[in-house]
Each structure stands twice: as C-alpha cells, then as structure tokens.
Amino acid sequence: DAGVTQSPTHLIKTRGQQVTLRCSPISGHKSVSWYQQVLGQGPQFIFQYYEKEERGRGNFPDRFSARQFPNYSSELNVNALLLGDSALYLCASSLVRQGASYGYTFGSGTRLTVV
Amino acid sequence: AQSVTQPDIHITVSEGASLELRCNYSYGATPYLFWYVQSPGQGLQLLLKYFSGDTLVQGIKGFEAEFKRSQSSFNLRKPSVHWSDAAEYFCAVGVIKGAGNQFYFGTGTSLTVIP
Image 1 (cartoon, chains in turn purple, orange):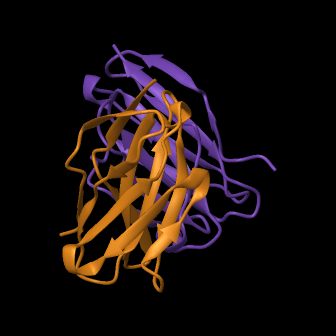
Image 2 (image 1 turned 60 degrees about the vertical axis):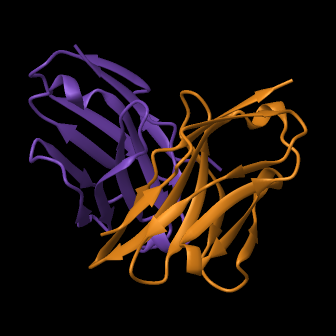
C-alpha cells in the first residue's frame, strides 16, 4: 500500500511569491494534518482537516491556508512568502478524526526554500 | 499549556551500548505519548505510542519507552544500539482540542553512533 505522498519534494521560491503543496493520504484515511518543521526544530502544527472540514489551526498567520478535497487529498497554500517560511512541510494522515490519540503516518515532506 | 521537553540536544553512543533518550511533557489530562524517528531528509516514522495501561511499551526496531506519570516523563530506551539507529528522535504528546487534535513535539535529540 502507498504511504502518505507529498509533492513536490523540493521547491525554491522567491520572497513574495505564492506556493501550493500537495498531499495524498493513505487510502481510507480521512484526516490530514500539516506541520512545519524549521531546521533544527520539532514540527509545529499548522492545520488539521477531517471530512473536508477544518478541525484545527495552529498559530500561523492568515497567509497560510489549506483545503481538503472529496478524495481526502489536501493542499497547503502559502501566500506572500517570507524567508522564514523556509522549512520542511510535513503532511500526516490518520484513519480517524482523533489521530493524535492513535498516531499519524507522516509523508516525507516538501522542502521549501525561499530566497 | 501543553509542551514537550527533550533536554538532550545531541547524544553520542558507541555501537552496542545502551541508550536512553529523555522526554518530559506538560499536559493537564491523560497524555497520549509518542516517539518518532527521522532520518536525514525524511519524514517521521512512528516508533511507539502510549495511551493507557502497561506503562512500559514496546516499539519497532527494539525500542521501548516507560511512562512515569509522577515524573511526567516518557523516556525512550534501547539495550543495544546499532549504527543504523543514528537519526533524530522526537517525542510528542497528542492533544485533543475541540473538534480536532494535534501533536506537540519536542525539539528533538540527535543521535550519533560511533563504531
């Protein structure tokens, strides 16, 4: 079975640009969460979606937005990129809404570099 | 507020030696606790998890962790380290918040294994 897949794997953008990151969860998983991992730090929660509805949002500015599609895949959008947005963006999926109780499966991430 | 502390930023052990990685958490309710491992440039792989019951939990790759409520700790151990265990290790607490849930991660412990 395929795991959580993320695309692209690497991305270089210029300050002020917009970026869209994509995630396909494990088949049957309805919950998708996004995390930002800055170099040398632990991942930080950005969003959780379940059944196409936002279920949680971390302490990130409105430049960050996301959505979940009927097939449970998800996109993370970041507008007006800043140098500080450079990070590894991780997508995680779980079978149930309360994935934090049972554990998530993480993708390999998208490495975003803002120059 | 929820938080996870991993006091050791970096640990070096000899191959075959025992290992203990420390994790302390702050959470008002019964915690859902996890250990993840991350190899360079990769996503996070679940090693083990604790929900309730037996406070000593077994995971993959020969790892185990012990939950000690009185010390708010969830330390990860391995009796004999292999060179392939060199990686970044993250402790996390799973929190249910309203309609959703999220992980709070520690800052990680980098493990180096020397021959």
